[in-house]
Length: 278
Ligand SMILES: Cc1cc2nc3c(=O)[nH]c(=O)nc-3n(C[C@H](O)[C@H](O)[C@H](O)COP(=O)(O)O)c2cc1C
View 1 (tube, rainbow, N blue to C red):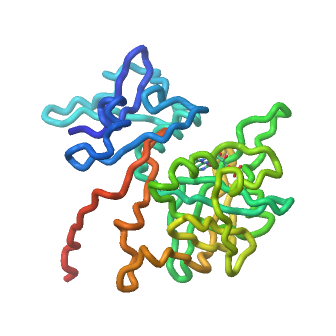
View 2: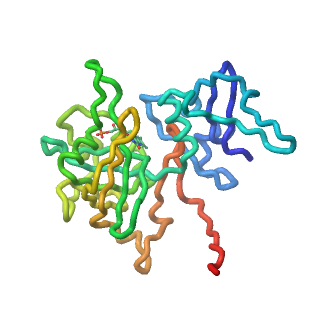
View 3: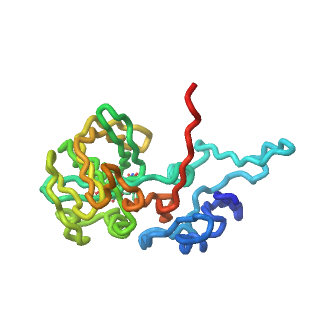
């Protein structure tokens, strides 16, 4: 029934997208259309261990108490650490598409990384954005931009790929930090395909690739996150995904990110008619 359950034990709040974390890992074909699954990410906790926010108040303090109304839990970002605020964003802005992004490092080696703070922004011309944060604090106290940010700022070019179910685990592996000079395509067994209009290569196995040129970077927030806006120059689509000139979503089989290590498949879809315009 409820898709978001909040526990409040020992003043810690936990997210659980199904009401029971153990159900998440086996829910891909569950009745009722549930289509979530966990990708193993050994460096981080599983979704069931994900403590999203330390709650400084008892739950009763948040209740608005109107008779006949569902109680509300209010979350004030001003009371949260940046990490906890991120957790709430991840669990409430979803499902998110994944921009699996290819760039070139300064030494010419290709770099891959996934970004789920990703969306389209305009259509004339088509533009997309990804949001890239900084690395965690280094021993010298600095928080340098992630490689994708630096590479796009320097070269102005990147390729965004759609992630399908078959590529999920490889996509996740590219969220690791690889030693400088590593060709991440070769490291995880992906094939490079030349792009037509820009230098960074595409992932040949990805069902869709979008060649992009940097439009602008806008830095926001106290931690310094880059909103990277790019103009979409060219789509590459595997031809076996097309029917009568249209993309067949069943064959695309895209996945999206829910929260933590929990992903969603796009196999359960439905249509809703828009009301007629007056
Ligand atoms: C599915 C997924 C989505 C992610 N989304 C983001 C994001 O939106 N922004 C971000 O800064 N990092 C995100 N990350 C983490 C980056 O992929 C990770 O920090 C990566 O090492 C960055 O690589 P780079 O230094 O080569 O750019 C995500 C990781 C995963 C697995």
